[in-house]
Picture (cartoon, rainbow, N blue to C red):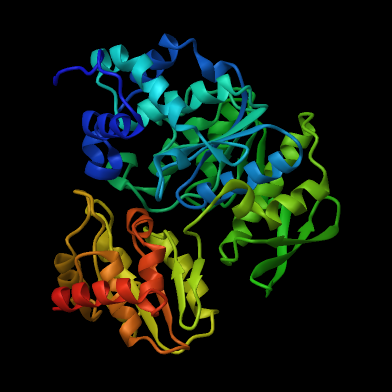
Length: 464
């Protein structure tokens, strides 16, 4: 165990360096950072007065969609006038994205103060990075006296560090293939881990079911005496279209036999499923006494990115050609992304792709179109799959392209080949999307000539 900085006053950057270097991070090293029980989280929170017992919450798990659902719900509740906490992971650019109150990130001072306060517990327990950030979020929400907090699980559910809360409602968006090395090698096993967030007498909303997962949820809900709500039974998306970069969805309330039109500023068509999950959850919260008007739902959904600050979900950051960022990184996520690509007008498709080592890389690659132009790259973390190794594996599936040392260099290369009506999509890893630089993107299309020259040199150096 390294020397403790207990007696050294740290600034914000030093605090982050301490957290990143002192604690094992799943996002960097993968399974080695995963803890198989809740002991550390329970001990950390006990040491700071069990803050998780001092605010109401909504708990959200799922293979895909939980980040979008979390942000939409937070935006709706904030619009409804509630002081709303939001805990999500991982972050794209700034550590403080993980912990927000009414859309504002946790202050740097709060990060420093919390870390310094619990250094003795860190030294004694040797917790993971995630365990510490969960405790930090709970402590911050309690200190800020939030009315309600949206808490997204990090991985799984049953053993996830967030799973010490007693929420108003539990939400499971869907079940798919991801983290099989930790959650199980069948969809039933994965569903069982996610179902671990279902609590005694607490209602649960299931966003999307498959034959393998539904019996698991029904059995767990019955055992826990937990009212079960299936969003596909309660609501149906009748039609959808795009209007001014908003996704407009006509939703049928199957209980009331009424229609309502919703506009989402998250324009990916896969958000249609997430919308039904959100509406079902709002209905459950209303039944428990939370005042959420239809106007609050409409306003929150239409401005959820601005209110709650969500990025990387079919996020268009350049047009002519279209440049899209999407954090799709597993089989189900990639399938949804490809569906979106099919309905988006474009000439040639350019895919900037980077993945991490512990994903089912071959299953993802076999789904990707051979006709696309590929730019294989990697995020700057130890867990990232080497870009050349990814290119070599992709060649087995007829996917051809060069490899690049960084995502921004890969984007530059794509910008030199893409026509004005082409589409460039960056995907495969949350961490890859997080490293995309807007200034680099501007440089690609000559908005910044000095940076453009720099990126040209890098691109020439790293082209294979």
